[in-house]
Length: 328
Image (cartoon, rainbow, N blue to C red; front, side):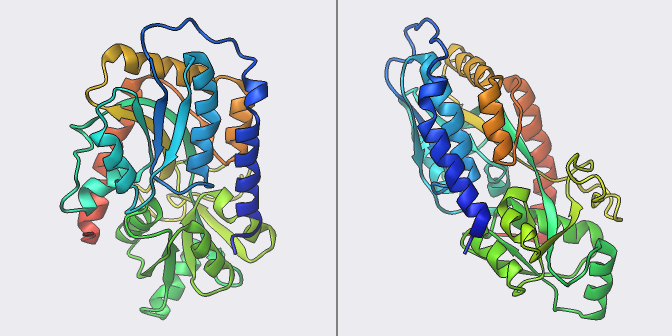
């Protein structure tokens, strides 16, 4: 059901896992006392998606530099909280977490998280950012103004799909409703693929998603982009307006993945991981693979990633509380 987009993700993931020989040509750096065992890299989502591939593409290069395996472990469930809780409990000094936007969002949506994302973790490095677009089913409305007018004329009928409660598209759409006054009903799915399939089939009206998630449906003409959720237009779609340009003030949403470590990890170890992930992101073959996944390679200091997390907390605390989203 996920079509060409899912097939593309699987092909990229196979390439990431099979490409170790080429990337292994990068010489390993001198090893110190740490790490003295494999690094456990927890991904709080199921295998096969962009998060999984991002982790694997970067992990194989970092492993070569560290001289120890970096083993990706998928721990999916409960809007990423299952895998995040697993990482928070780790005391071996060799566990890291791939953190997505729900790393921030869930602290406001869940009443009793088994961890504190601020107290129990430290930022290591931002890996990638990714644009988020508003998409509509074909033959619906082609502008956000048209969508608002249709919703006003058909109260209670507009629907939007998401990968599930507490996901970035869910909370981002609730923020869109808050900023624009749009009346729309949430339809949660068990993943982005089923949501995109129902959008293409015309069973729901709208969806916020990354371009990769709906690439096959867009190419087939079953889904159309309406606006960019980020602060600027995309180079590849210069005629597509932003939601801010479409009359939604103060609205900016983007996807991202970063590396977090348990708070107890020593500074020296976290700093080495930051250096190694930044070095991996600088490699042309790594950057190419990430761009193919629909992501923009990022990198930078742990402090800069921490500042992004703080800005995200301000944004999503407002959205979750205004939408009165509570999850068990």
